[in-house]
Length: 311
Image (tube, rainbow, N blue to C red; front, side, top):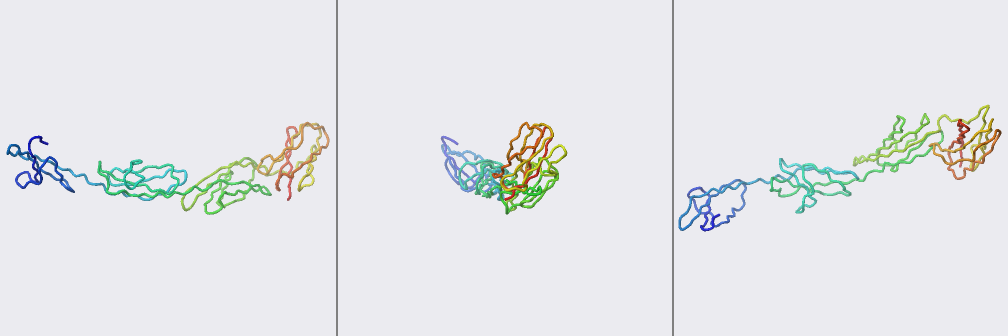
């Protein structure tokens, strides 16, 4: 700058013709580093020329990036590269403000298939265009299941979604299955955590759930001995039956009815009972058909009767 003289611009350090005059010189499009020279003319005298270098920062290449996918509830991972350039991410093809920066970023809260745009920058110089990256959204499969007891001690497990998925069952006793709705027989009474993992083979999205199952049906037989007798008649029955038991001495008695999963479904009248035979009405009209167990707690001893309610 000079506030009194006039400026002349040249392409050469000496000689040559004037390219431009004035305090502002628009060089036009410059694609590589270049050098210009400027002199000051004042009172008819022209000064030696001063070098003015133009350093060109190359535009970064349009980023390389691949489309990706995301499962419901998870974060999407977006990746793009352009040599050593910095990567900035947008939700708009043009304009807008970046939502994040970095060659790899995570985006949460995606609920539908979406497009993001990667822009590369060398300093302040951005790419001429942004690279679109499509994030394909997939719903998460439903990994819940129901449990249903069966005759002969088997338990059937039914997934909420019965087709189109891969199934991996873990029954909690060391056994596994890939059947859609397996029926499993336990060999030992106890509590087991049953886990189901389902995978959508198209998207790779998965879900899982765990349920506790109590098995009480293994090895039970009607309780009869010289000192204690008990029976349910009729057995099988449809709507109601009668429980009869004989005590050799007075005892405190409690009577509970459980299903094959060990879940209590009703209690029968009991309390402190004298020695002798006692009858209790067993009204099962509200119970579904199937196998049940009547547990009589007599003092410190538990006796179990297997009963069947028919249709």
